[in-house]
Figure 1 (cartoon, helix red, strand yellow):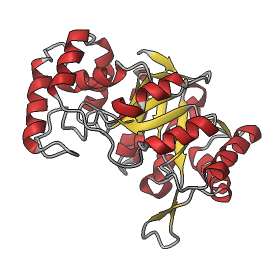
Figure 2: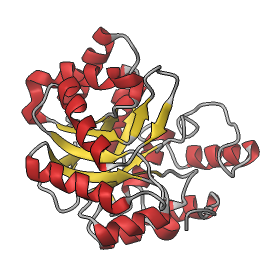
Figure 3: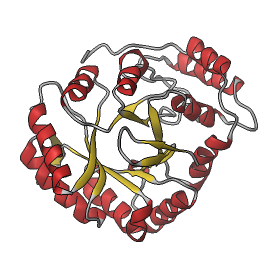
Figure 4: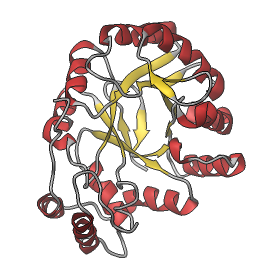
Length: 298
């Protein structure tokens, strides 16, 4: 396993990390999978209070309780479940964030959260108030560092200018190269690490049948799959090639993979043992798969 620093923090995150949203409701299976991931060198586990109405944090906290000093626990806040459980509403207010953290701490069975992330956000939010909440939580010792989870360039720029974020989680893959246009270099220049989600594009870069994805038609996805296959081999699967593409950008510290089966776990971790992408292979991928730009929130 390779480890990369998260921003200017003293945290070293595994290059392949565990996106816990993929966990189901089988506690025994979840625990086994999380323990296997840790044994294979994964130390970054990313959850959110939104997932399974908090049960996801419960699963993660219980499974990793006796291994707390070996892991980086990352969770998210901002989506407030309605009292009747019918859905959630966006709430980036200071009082909500400072109350919600205590529920996450209890579910995760820990005294502190390594990385607390704002789970979304818009330029119209009371950003100063949100930042104040995170800064106070750091001072109070409830969290060690904070970040955001955003694909909106205008929101990202605002937090870079006004806060001390350590990370930004964002969707990025060969089928979603929008971050390359405005975000990745800017984040890297500010010393903020990117935590990638969606690195294999809902499985489309790992062998799932082609279908339309974002601006890409089904035919375009099929062509992308063929190109990926042509650059893969018995030593590097298409999914591993896709993950290594994400990790090739210096802004990217880790790719949070959605893992629900042992086979997925083993393939994702083994990507780091596969042959690295050459500059020529990266060029071929970039020229062969169209990159789109963000049309909104610029």
